[in-house]
Length: 360
Image (tube, rainbow, N blue to C red; front, side, top):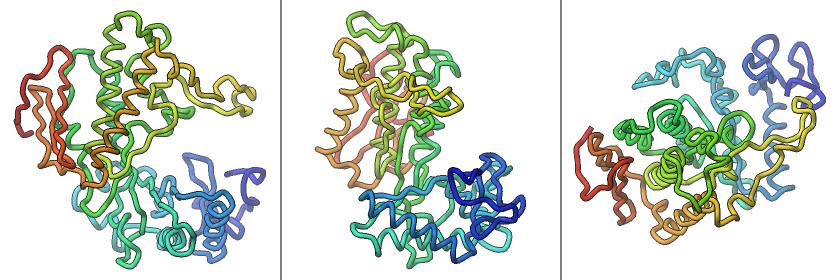
């Protein structure tokens, strides 16, 4: 935090924990940045992980915004092209601007989580640059995480499915969807999710709201025919989740409430909202009411988990791009995993009588 009331004591010169001067401040977040080259900083952070794991019996550790730890440039002001392709000089070497102290902390944190703590912690990284070796073991000079969060998938669904971004009858970019859902290094396991935490907490709209808009408040009755927006939104809400789960995931993540299309965000009382409790809850009664389509979304989510428990597809490697049949004109996408055929018809106006193959 940028304030001593919520975090460590602040010092203009950085003090014992933070980088001095402008380098010690994150311009986008207003927070302070640690000096990972200092032994006392490593001790503090590693002790904090151990304390929370032991005191609260946690079973996992997630490093948020790992790129701000791994690079001195913090990925600020860089275009996506900076890390694209085979430009490994962006990750390794004198021009990479990797923070060796930050990388040391990450490796030590994973060693602590897996070797010193009992039970060992599952470790997950939210990392935006595509840093190679993020999930390689530390003995092979990797960072040591168990999973990389598949950050591009929520952006994909939010961009391609939102009603405001395209006409309701517009074809979906089937090949682009297949590309993004299979974008992974062979040595990395991905934690896949259809919506990010900003779409559950205050900050962004849930995918269901992007799909259906205000119809979520007055058009979700299961006792009346759905409007075109609701019919499309409910169908794509289900499709996006099953595709993410079955095609992209080595592990699957959902933020509470998004599984049934919760129409609003969660926001705890703060000074910014007048200490209001209005949004400090999840409206579970929506999913409990069989007369609402929220209950149908929840039932579909439970059916997905039941299918995975039966087929155990997460125990099988996800398909590669070459394993996926994506036919844009027919709006079909199909693949096999764990001995099961998954076939998706993305046309809004007709059913599929057969599965076709037309490579993209």
